Amino acid sequence: MYRMRKDLTEVVPEDGDGSFSFKIRNKAGASEKIDVRAVRIGQDGSADGLEGYFEANGSVFGVPDSENELIFRLREQNGVQFIASAKGRVVAAVSVWENGPVSVSTENIFCIEEYRRLGVTEELLRRVCAYLAGKGYKEATLFVYGVNTYAVGLYTKLGYNIFGGTMHMLFEDGYVPELI
Image (cartoon, rainbow, N blue to C red; front, side):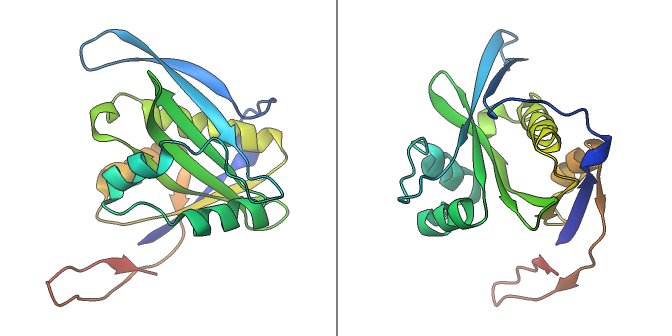
């Protein structure tokens, strides 16, 4: 697994509440609108706005995120969940939480299969970083499996640089994940 870092001082900042829209060309070549909403957890722990997130997340990763862990990170670490939807369906997301006063994690990044390689994740993460720069953050970090060369390439294209090492462990079934 690689740890990557992006210098947000080099990003043109955007103001706003973190909600925005953009257009893509879908696989049929038609223009399609992607709406992004920024979900924050209420003081009471309410998670309004996460509808559809866990189902989409689970379809990508095989097992959905833990709702309790996500709510904890978003509430206790001043986090925001950016959820991209098309035609009322969650298609991509980025979780953001503070590491410190000027550093944030950009994690749990995913895009469902039918919207991959259409620029959704690239534009979503680019705009999220602009929002974070506008809030005064200086760096964004993430973890990514080194074997996920497409994601590593995308993050590198967006200005993230690898700064963490790797180590490996072997599971009984022969799977070798990369770990820091």
